[in-house]
Length: 89
Image (cartoon, rainbow, N blue to C red; front, side):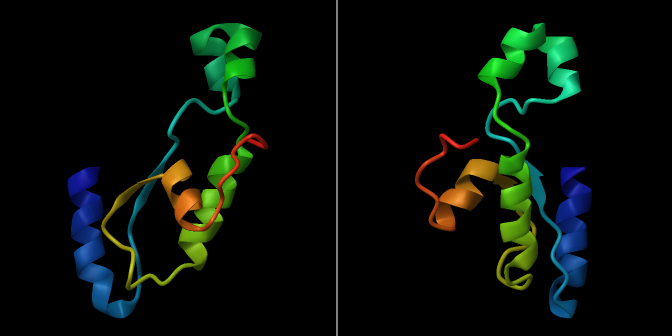
């Protein structure tokens, strides 16, 4: 996946189309986490899915020519966008 993403990023760079990967910095409260990582207690330790949505929004609304061919962490993306408090997530 990583080699494909980097190849696509380079191929589409001049067209203004970005190709990045966005990953959570920690677990996200999903049904898969509940099932595989310990039930309700795992969900209580996980972040809300909104953190990925907010980070994706920042990436998708950003300049595709400036940020392409990278693997990004949700928390880093939001921190670079000015978010300092992650308690809401």
